[in-house]
Figure 1 (cartoon, protein in one colour):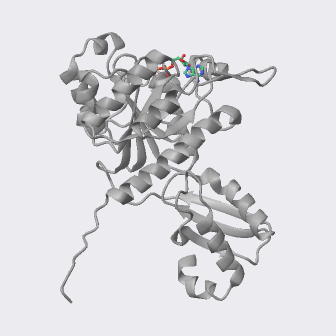
Figure 2 (cartoon, protein in one colour):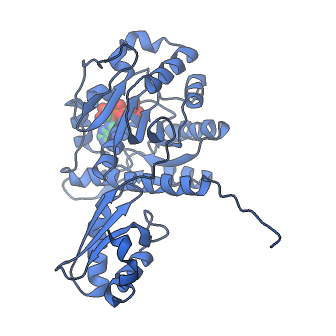
Figure 3 (cartoon, protein in one colour):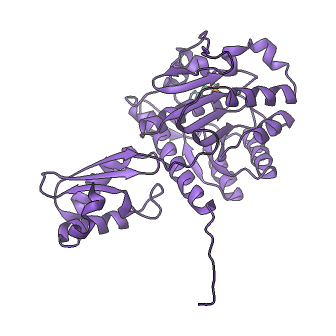
Length: 357
Ligand code: ADP
């Protein structure tokens, strides 16, 4: 491990330069640069020079940008590799972070966003689970192509999640018919969410993404109070009505002191497949202004794209090979995981003891 060689590094100017360049590398994902403690190895004898990082959040895809940056800055070839190991701070059982994905209004693409962010977090190196709590239209089983599957149990008390592409999936849709669930009142809905969370064998996961029912009423409020979440993401489209409802969503989370981690603007714009021109079909800058007004980041502007709709109709999701679209979710996942890391750092209390001597 590189940590053991830290004294030796002091004698090697190139290694020192690499460490300084990494410390100075700042962007939205690395707001404070790259901590020297995250460097697990530097091999200047290799060509390209190898640099290995172990990040406390999911951003493995940043490796190529870092390789390019180091190559430009130091005029040598670099190969940066990254792994992701989150600190062992559990929010609930062996779950490190729970993130609620909410929307003020139905049909804005909340479930689509939840699933793609889950996939993107996993593509960036994290262990991920998805909990579908959308009692009004559980679409997660369909989006993961596991419709009709039934979770198994080994002790008649707890349920094993369905595992799809290494993501652990649990849905209200696996357990009750949609007709039954839609007539539930608040207490039943929140009870169902608690049960799904408590009685699923999640094992150790970094991020549990919860697809909440749309709306900002009592049901959503009670559900929010039942889950020890790190924060919520608000999905909206640029239309005025959706934005108004999104604003109510932010107010709801503020009421229960749950941090709003950011806003995702879905169907943000349309890029013409013929001329490449970007048009803002549903209006412009609405989500940006909403985010600004509430002091939260706008984490992504996902285009309106036929492939996203087609994929969901074919009971699939976009994957890493659909780079043009999936990269929006990747960027969002990187920002989200970095924010959660720094948020946890800032809320972990440090006791400062002042003594007379
Ligand atoms: P919600 O969970 O908010 O009800 P869904 O995620 O189920 O919304 O999405 C509603 C419909 O819109 C689905 O058919 C989905 O495929 C489609 N959709 C979502 N996001 C996009 C997008 N960015 N471009 C095109 N279609 C989209």
